[in-house]
Length: 357
Image (cartoon, rainbow, N blue to C red):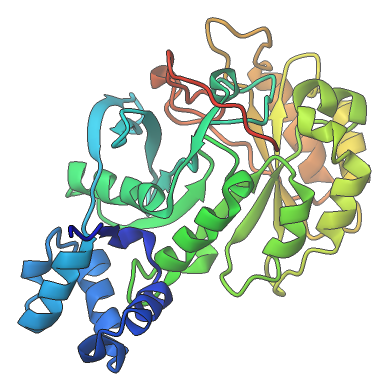
């Protein structure tokens, strides 16, 4: 009988301990540090086979070989921007493709990862939405994006930040997201600081309400993009289920450490969301919350029905917020020339599957 092998990168360290205990592998289950060692080999030394785990006994390595495999993902294409950003198209085992973006900064680097193939949220300004949702990514497919980027860019040191702002709605893939976050922040895994990981949501309230109370932590970012229900519903269908009043209430109840804030992402669209009146209403809407606002000038594409604001209007909008003591950086979108900026990630001609939100 052939034993079906498990993808070991879909296991958290605790999952791995529990598997060994359940399957009565005494030489491992009675020694919890074995899972620690395996994780360090996988995520810190980045080995791709069990026979390279040199401080693990032969018997244990044979058990691993018989029941698990180490997976990786291949980059099928990459596009380099004038600003140094690089968009990677990554091939999955089922021939679907996701996009991951490397974003260089002066003192650190960021990787923008995807959580789904496509997206079900239908945001009107986002190219990923045009794909529809094809499927969720499993934990290994989420974390292997980081491996793939590192392998392609061995000299890209100081990868400090991870942002879940790529393809998909992370909270629509909640279980796999949380497993990936556990591996990313595990001291024996990637060992990223939870303060350097940000999860962006379009506003799925049931998940926002539980995310803040999870043992595994990360920063929360909420895509707002409208200061009235009419405008936000036009741009983001999720607002029909979870309107602004419900969203703001959930954010007001979200537990925050003393120095943390919720980030609200606000896309500036010419003639729709970029007026000074919108800026005034934005301040009123968020009054009483601990927050900052990331202002994102809309990244237009050849097929866009919306336009980017003028640079002058974007700066006027920002100035109004700054004058009212609001933290409001104006994001200079990286990777626009390679369709790698916010809202531009998409892969054409892929099979859609209908998912319920």
